[in-house]
Length: 199
Image (cartoon, rainbow, N blue to C red; front, side, top):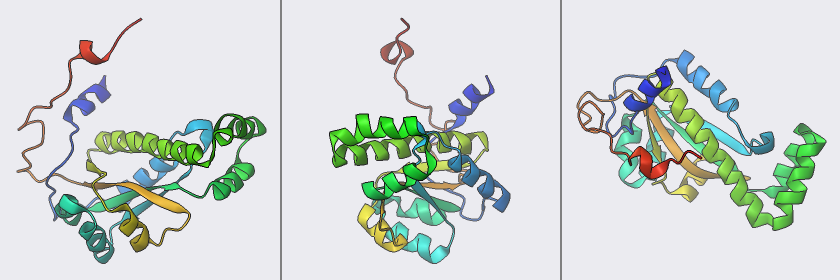
């Protein structure tokens, strides 16, 4: 499987080549791939921000603890946010989803309360993260998913109101001296028999 080899080579980049930028064509592809991300009942409770502007990237880096250097060196920063406003979400699905999906939402999700709905919407955004990281790896673009950020400051910098920042991903091309790449430091994963059962 070609993707198996891609999975073996993919890693969380710790140091980027600050002189190499992702082409506009590849960024356009990544945007379309994110748009096509899967979500439960096709709910799509998200908004994504692709940031290449130096000033904005610097502000976000300053709100990213130990991740600041990666963000400043990377070609782009992609911020993943989830809808927080349940009423706004219901307006969206009423205009886009079939009756069966809307009924599912009301019966199994909304019936458990607003907090449950908000948690469920965040879970959908994490699905898009996996999809995005796989797409980056398949496109030979390096990536660093980061939860170590100041979410509220991100919201303020990006002017978010009905959405809330969950995490960010730095993307670009690795520095040849990055010691975390698999050719230098072997990947560490649990054994197959410890995590997978065939029934």
